[in-house]
Length: 138
Image 1 (cartoon, rainbow, N blue to C red):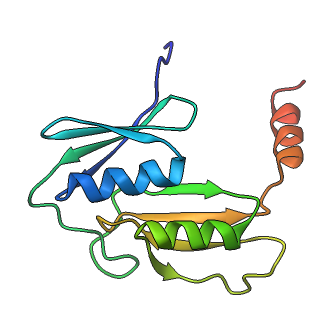
Image 2 (image 1 turned 60 degrees about the vertical axis):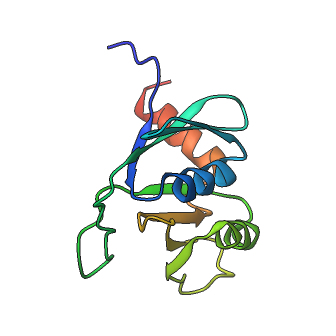
């Protein structure tokens, strides 16, 4: 299969809040239709779709309605990422045990309630490249 594009699609009752949040996280912008928003990242790539779902019931992670999908976003500066996603409308669901640790993650919810993680230090880009290379025999 030749993959042309990979787009993650979120259901949301409030298209604007959801798409504006993810456009802010990705440093991009939104292309809007009445029942669908396309989130374009800073490089001009279509990354996320937001589909109108007027009766959307947000996940209640971790003990209620199960998460339908979640993203892991790996960053170099977790404090800056935390401040940015919170300013964009995220809600902190689970704080890291030690925000100053070399490795960790925090769990957030976007405006429609979809959980996502902001992680750091696991693995480094170098460690990931070495792992992939070793698995592919290169």
